[in-house]
Image (cartoon, rainbow, N blue to C red; front, side, top):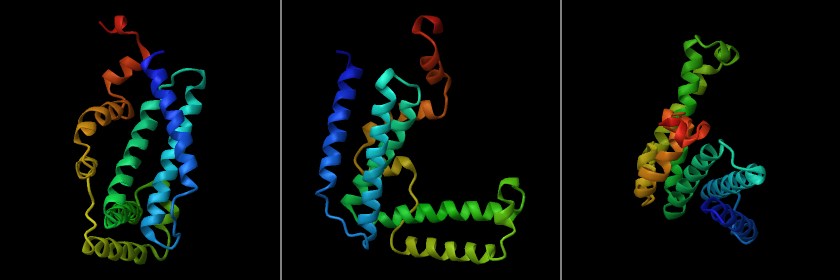
Length: 188
């Protein structure tokens, strides 16, 4: 049995166990931390299930990209479970992304955002998101880069190895493309 087969077998087992355990998890839908943790847990289950389904008829080139997303969700979940205030970091990041989107719309240059650009309350929405971002930052919610998230989770070795490799596939580096589409002998 190859290492890939062993890993896939472990993933199937972990996925099954994680689904079973999900029925026993305490969950308060009114508590922001519980909502975040369950959403991350659900994402991890979905990514795992996707990997299992994709590998039924052999390896697929999309697997590293899905694994990267799974690993990012896992890091966020670890950090959130370790410190509920990490939820402010997740919210600050979301607000920052919304502001970027809305400011792009306010610029009026993107043909994809014409309807958003024309909204009469666009500036009010920007102001509301600026206030929310300031509130999250006031509660300790710094917008962290992915490296800092891994560092906070105590996973720097994983960041510099596994995550870096998965990112090479997401970004279509020449090294990843060669491994994905050519045999080792063809690349020499």
